[in-house]
Image (cartoon, rainbow, N blue to C red; front, side):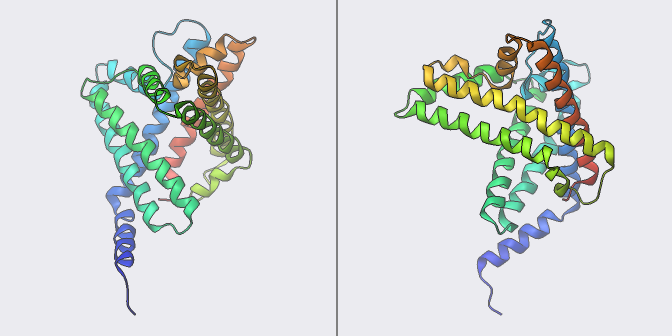
Length: 263
């Protein structure tokens, strides 16, 4: 049988994906994601009750870790976990056959690699505010030809991701990511986590769309800005408490995923 160069690349990707280091690293990455979501839940509660000094964002959660006496040392395995989890997603891009699966793996690879870079920056002592980064990015894009449409498309894309989170949680599709049933506690936390995290992401998407429509790039401030906007709504505190519960549940589920993930 004649094989082409693509077959060799796929075999190499399969071998890389099955490597024990990649397997261990991907699970470490899922555990790190769980830690971040637990911290996000805590920061969200702080915003809900009006005594927050930190940002309820992934960079804010990493900043909280870095502040601790042992924090910067803890961040190095977090860096390794996210980078190896991104590398495993790259092998998935190569080995998956469906375009949709490749696209999903590609998106996750970008997210996990970005988290690894952010964790590295805080471990190195050079981390910066994600709110400022998001505003600067939005301001730059708004200055491009068709920039408002791009920002609106980003918001719509985030809304799509949010809707998928809700669907995945409601239909319990996340169980397909696991190699065996983790138990009812993980199903409950996974379902709660995906649905309420989707609700939080939808607020982020709405703010991007508003920023595009009103030409107000300062509206697009990521998760932290979205949560602060929700706090100002009627029953905003209740909404934020529910989102905090969802983020904590997602964090607990992520620890289950670290153990049972199909890697």
